[in-house]
Image (cartoon, rainbow, N blue to C red; front, side, top):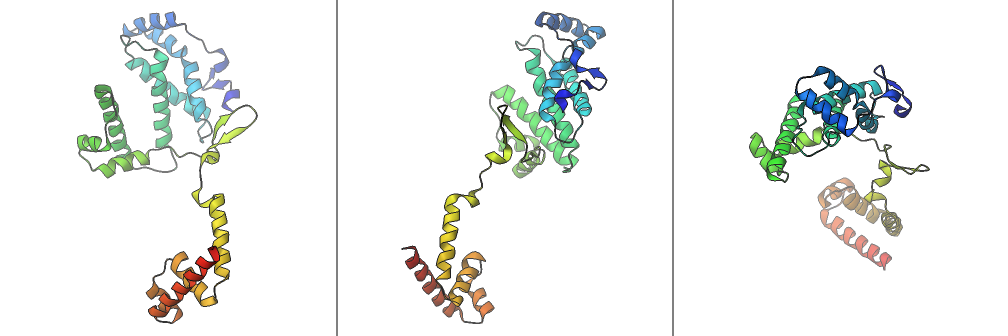
Length: 258
């Protein structure tokens, strides 16, 4: 498991340095002044942050080494774009950057292939979304994104859907130390509730009370989706006869329910 992997990409994770808030601030001043040694020290001092972020992506078929390298790219981008004048901790800014970089890597290397044009459109939409949120304090609607990018609304919706990460039904979402809760445990199946089971049993019992021809007509009409004309053609009688037999069958079923 990733938690037990001590060495990743040649880095001994058990000996990673940890910087204090004061050290980070001092190093950042030097980094902005072009000090490469300070930059390298700052990167090494934040590798624990990368390690903590990539653990949530373990189990998706990628090696810990690959995830760590990609996470480091996100860390470096965060360092290069971080604004010291903003009243926010570096880790608060860096974590979404690292997560975004890892997600892009997983999407681009996903076995479910998404065309480059669709991915590009989705990324442009996301960029517009982030810019709009920053300027207006709220997220834009799909219509506003589509208008800005000069595409149809459906194209934006499709592109967002296409880049969503597939999730395994067996992926754990909670663990209290003794028992795990998985995605599949949170999915409701409307077709398999106790009420549906009871209703199906009742309907099956009602159908057993019908004669063979009535049962055939009800099955074809309401379970197989046939029209009265189609049923008449299939069993060799007129539509009027099908209509009469259907009404009789429904009356019998109603009596059974009472």
